[in-house]
Image (cartoon, rainbow, N blue to C red; front, side):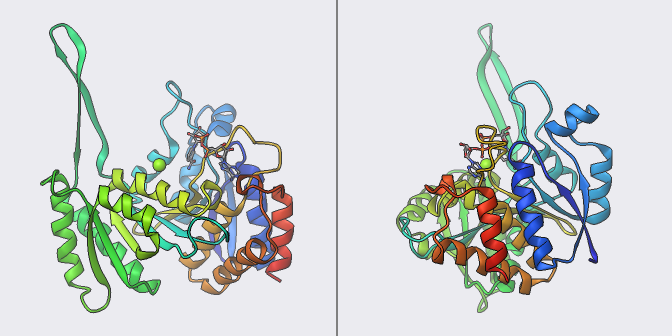
Length: 338
Ligand code: NAI
Ligand code: MG
C-alpha cells in the first residue's frame, strides 16, 4: 500500500458504512494506507474539539481524505466541520455525479455531474440585520461575492473534468438576467473559458430556474453542469433525488492538491447503530477516490460490482424500499468484485 490517506469514520451511521467501504477496499487491494483520525461529535466528546489538530495535520500531510458524515449540532455548539474544511483547504470544487443505477425508477438514463463552486457566492455569510423604527431585526441583509479568478477556475475545472471523463457538453447555470453583476461575472468569465475548449467540449447556457424544471422533465439531456455555490447546492440535491436519493449520492470536494471524498447524506441519527444504512453512497465516493489517484481499473471494478448487486441481484437497502442490511451489501459486493 503506497498512497497515504486520512480516514474519518464520522458520526451516526458513519462507522457502519465506513466499515463496509474499507472491507471492500481491502478486497480490491486498493493502494490506500489509511491514517485513522476523528472529527465531529465523537471527537468533540473525546478531545473537546470537533476538529482536532492531529486530524488537520493528517489531512495536510496526505491531501487525500475519505470521510464519513459528521453531525453538526443545531444552534449552539461548533461550526460545520464540512464548511470549515472546505475553506481551510481551499476545496473550491464540489463534484457530484448522478447516474441511474437502480432500474424501475422515474428515469432510465440519467448520467450527469453537477460541479458546484464551493467557497464563494451567496454562502460567504456576510449577513446582518438593519434596524428600522426601533425594531432591531426589521431588515435582514445579506451579500455575496464571486471573483473573476474563482469563476475562471471553477469553469476551467468543469471543462477539464469533461475532457478527462469523456463527456461532451458543459452547461453553465446562472441567473445573470436578474443578478447582472454577481451572476453576470460568472457567465461572462465562463464563456471566455469555454471558448478555449471549442471543438472539444460543447457549451450550453441555462438560467437556473429553467434548468431546475428541465432537470425534472428531461434530465437525460444534461452532461456536466457547472454553477455557483447556492445554485449548485440546490440543484445537486435535486439531481440526487432523480436517481434514488441520498443513499446513492457521492460527492468530492476538490482543491488544487487535495481531495475529500464523502457521501452527500448526513449521519442519519434515526437509523444509527441498527446496521441497516445503505453504504453505497460512501462506496461510490470511494470509487471516485480510486479514479482520482489514477486507479480507474479498480474504480471500474467497484462500479461494476455495485451495478451487479443492484441491477442483477436486485439487492435493496431500506432507503431503496428493500430489507437488505449494510452487511448484506458488503457481502454481496465482495462476491461481485471477485
Ligand atoms: P441525513 O442525510 O443524515 O438523513 C436524512 C434521512 O435520510 C434520514 O431519514 C436518514 O435515515 C436517511 N439516510 C441518510 N443516509 C442514509 C443511508 N446511507 N442509508 C439509509 N438511509 C439514509 O440528514 P439529517 O437528518 O438532516 O442530518 C443528520 C446530521 O447529519 C445533522 O447533524 C447534519 O448536520 C449532518 N449532516 C452531515 C453531512 C456531512 O457530514 N457531509 C451532510 C448532511 C448532514
Ligand atoms: Mg446541501
